[in-house]
Image 1 (cartoon, rainbow, N blue to C red):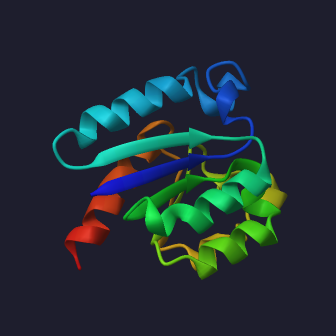
Image 2: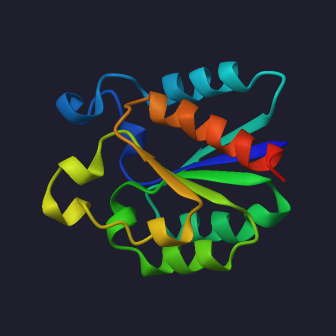
Image 3: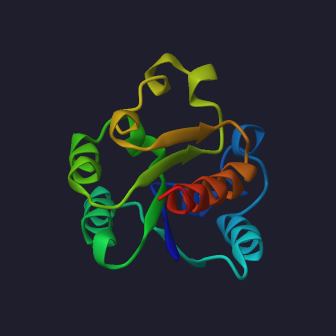
Length: 144
């Protein structure tokens, strides 16, 4: 089984950007934790981009490269109709994740445009949101 983890804008700055919200763990640290948790159970691929178009293309291509996609779309969660449409058109189940609890933050973050077309949403568990996303992805495939 292959699980594709897609990361949107500014996640390359984890560990430096707003540590009071996002913590001091880097995206590389998170990737290492997910890989350790997945060992012997799934092949993991991590990607990060600040480009909305790349995220859309990666979702479109996911059917030929992965069994499940886990996405932290970051700011595009609340703004990208294009990303929502790509997820809706995808043959691959997609799980939405966030480090912070988007529902407990600024009002504009409360609405996720992608949530209605994802299998589910995990938010508010810091770096562990990624590990929970892994477990959710594994459970999706085992339920088939």
